[in-house]
Figure 1 (cartoon, helix red, strand yellow):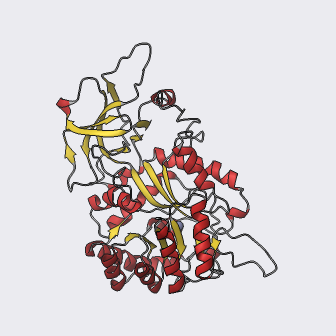
Figure 2 (tube, helix red, strand yellow; figure 1 turned 90 degrees about the vertical axis):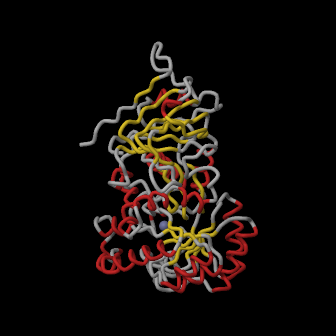
Length: 455
Ligand SMILES: [Zn+2]
């Protein structure tokens, strides 16, 4: 049984109840994994002023006017970054859930999902195209960045761009039907340019391409390459003109290799990775987001319809894929945590199991922690903001009871979460959390994080 965390707040006045001062905190865990060093740091306090980390000092040198939050028994880390997610998915019907939920409904559930993920330590999320014909994710990004609702930092693409008949299309309808696909369908360089311009116009800060078929979509094949080299080149060039990076969903080897050659910033999944793909990724500096755990999750639950499942295939190929991921890491490919589970239906603690699968693939626990913090921040272009416990960076911090370097599963439960210098979990009441936002001009917590006790 887990110990109950003792969050000890000393150094601030306790007159007539707890008054939480916005601003000056000293966090004192047992150890700090800073996202950079190869070993944890001990005997240090992390100083936070306003929304930024301002220092790491020996505990005896904590300035007297800082409120001390004692986090005994914990490991303090940069807030976790999930570089591949679909927060608007609200049930397990991957391809057609969007037909039964409006954009507003999905955004409301998505907010609950995002807040749950925040309290589980995920302070930044890259959305990789979502089950929404409109732009619900961009609205979530907006209300969170405006400080109206509390949630993780959001970046990403509104939709995945797919060819007709590809993984983002609906391929099971009769020709008479006019079902709206959840993906953005584009064929040929001109349509792709227009789709990208539309994505950017409505707030996407990544472009997501379905370069190959997908596993769970009807009517296409993950071993097929969807876009032609001309289409890929047009997509990357158009996005680059707007300074927007491209993420490529790619399973088939040739799709991975073509996307890397075309200059995408990240490869998602990369199921049929080869040594040639690895060499290309090293050469081009491409990030790799394998999203392993989702396969385990669906293979070991009955969440998918029987017709969508291909468990025996997955189990057969999983080991060789993990070996390739380990080889990619060894060769110097920048591997990043992406969970890909998406949505309201998924228990939030299981997202952290992606770290364990990376360890299983041969990464050290420390390397896997970096994959979900500093390396992920590098992928997002946010190294000057988040992903490291360093003075000057934003105070997105999370503490876990125990030591993830010895037992990676401790990441499944957070003891303490701070985002942007605000305590969002760990020893403070909702009123105290709201009180911190004084002076920021807006109520940062407009609603309880979740009313569902199961969450
Ligand atoms: Zn995905």
